[in-house]
Length: 253
Image (cartoon, rainbow, N blue to C red):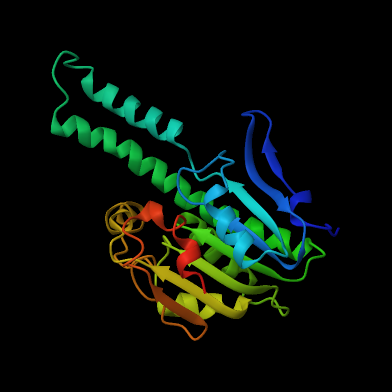
């Protein structure tokens, strides 16, 4: 079965009343179609304003879709953290929160992050299947943070596909390994270029990224050493993980 466009395929968990995979069409236009993907803690958020300025300027005539996936959200993060801090407080509920108790609370953050890492793999694999089923034959994928990881997993599933349906890829502050062998395989799914925008000032990737991956070299802080990759150092423009999208229009290739 072929879909006319990606937004015809969405998954909802009706028992929990949550969207698992939701591709929303933002505007009509020509191909290649643009797909933007947000990162950690953006689940159920419909705010695309930070993408909008750049996408409309760079690709004014292209069709545009936005993927909402199970990247976790602040409510889940807060609930898990408070639950674990609460458990730590049971023996002595009247004591101030000590360092060990804070550490237990931080384990809620770690669990939320690891959940999002796992979901990014599932979402990337699902995205590849959806794109192959659509009548649209070319895409430009743009992702921030764990959204870049969704794209990486999507490329991994498409790397052996005979027809290259991914024209270009833009990765902002990517929470993905810079392993040369893995990227040399993944880039086989891309027709033209993989643009990797990285900042040495991204302290979130420097610290949080290690919690679930034990990897010290995320592409959001380092280079991708593969043939189709072009690395753009945006350290002077991007001083934190959360400002990659804000300044995207100033450095996009």
